[in-house]
Length: 474
Image (cartoon, rainbow, N blue to C red):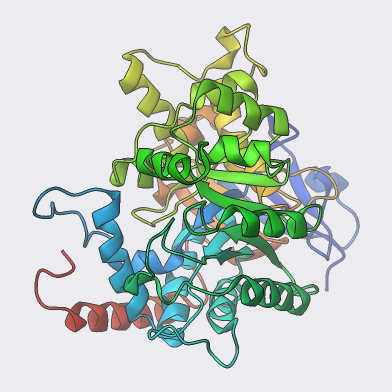
């Protein structure tokens, strides 16, 4: 075994700038030891030439529901009487009810493989499928979570399994048949969460987090218990204020909006990530900023479901960390999500460069738009998942991806424009190599298990299509 590996690209983004003539020096344990020229590498170093490529820190997908990949493109028509987030959920329940543990593994595996091909090196899987299709607990209560973890490990992706708590359909609502695979009692949830944490305490590239699904699914008293257990031990993620109706339901039950409720009860913290957080007041964004809480925006899903436009400029003005997630898997492209967050604001305001903080003296942080969006897609995403990484600094895991500089989407890129080109122009076809913990899991666009992953996923898709009558999943 070589003592080190030196990955030598044409351009290397590290330490906040683009380097040429230097490579990334990685230890045998997969940790970044620094930047080095070919001539100055330690004796015995294995050299990996990446000619014509740029090397950048790996992307973080902070919010994912892998099983929803199963009905991509099959819930885009308009239902009778109109189509909203709430009617879309009926399609989601069909997919949730369909998957066996074996199916879930194959769907998650294909979804994670697609993430790798998009330059993603770490994922936060917000996992809420716990029981069998009849709502009964498996003999191993974490069976489905373990299937998702196994799928990530099989393709080499770093995963934070965000185990979701789901206790009810909503305030004074009877249990929903489509959610019966989600429900656990509060005691069951806490026991199963702790069991999963204990089992994977030493599993390489696998960690566990807490994810109370939403204020409609987890009553306040139980939410406070979960937050207290998670505090200082693991990240806590939850959906919040994705829909105006969610705010109204929370106010009817508690006399406060969801974010106000969390702030008043000490649930917001630097270890908390709020997913979506679209429909907040100015005072609520200030409360999020004061607590050091992160917001995970999912622009592709949010426009797919008609949720609304996340006011990312309000977050930026207050210095709120923003990260990205692929959520429903309508498409998997974190850099597309980064650019679309800005583009949504351009459509709203009929102006350009809304998030270009370099032109805004009153914002908490002043950073050119390409750099700030790329940081959201990398280092901030890793931080929201409670993981080291997202930068190529000394001592950090060597998680990275490479870009073919001859790909038409970025043809002509130079060192000065690399970051802006990556955020605003890069097509997934340009991503050629991906490494996690210093090991290449995608090499020149190929994965060791690619053919098997594709064929097994197609088989599940065909059975899914044949399960429903024509038109039922369109």
